[in-house]
Amino acid sequence: MSIYFLFIIEVALMNDPDYIETLEIIALNVKKFREKKGFSQLNLALEAECSRTQISRIENRDVNPSIFTLSKIARALDKKISDLFIIKDKEATKKD
View 1 (cartoon, rainbow, N blue to C red):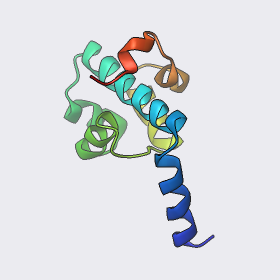
View 2 (tube, helix red, strand yellow):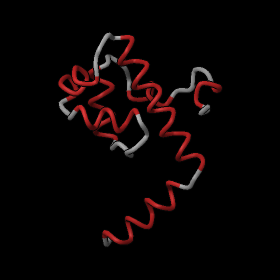
View 3 (cartoon, one colour):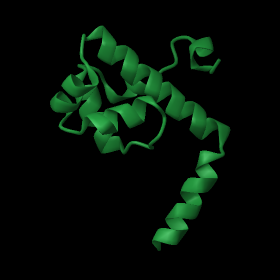
């Protein structure tokens, strides 16, 4: 597959409401679990072996994290990767 083709797929996904909602759920859960554990973004990044910028971009819905990255983050938070996709409060996923 060409990079151009993958870019077109990514752009199409970015306009899909389900895709956007999934990124919002992941972002909210990463932040919630990080704060409950008492971690700063830097602490989590060090534990998950990724950059603080990457954690920030995930929490701000600016990036589509890979399963590998989510797995490392979940492990650092003592969670299962599936916990990052669970909606506890549907209203919490809506933006103001």
